[in-house]
Length: 119
Image 1: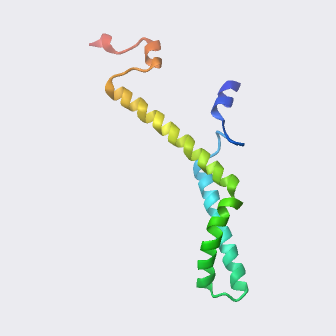
Image 2: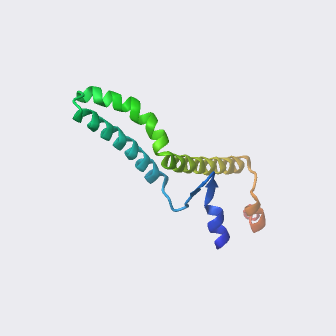
């Protein structure tokens, strides 16, 4: 059981991706953090008398690249989650292609039931 838990958590660099973590939650959190930084910067500029439209434009130019550095941990978590999802999808796609070709996996061979006896 412990081996499954260790195998299901993947280490990428210095960050460990927890298996219970939801990729959608991480993406929403990262997006909200970036837009929050944009709104905060726009609010600060507006307090100093900068017109709202100009403050928003400056905030986009400054906050979006800055958030790549400030929220590096969140970005890495999203990147790791997306990489895991892409790997699972690739493995599933390869499995489906093998089934379409008629290849059987090791699991089916070990079971011994090919379904051909019924023919």
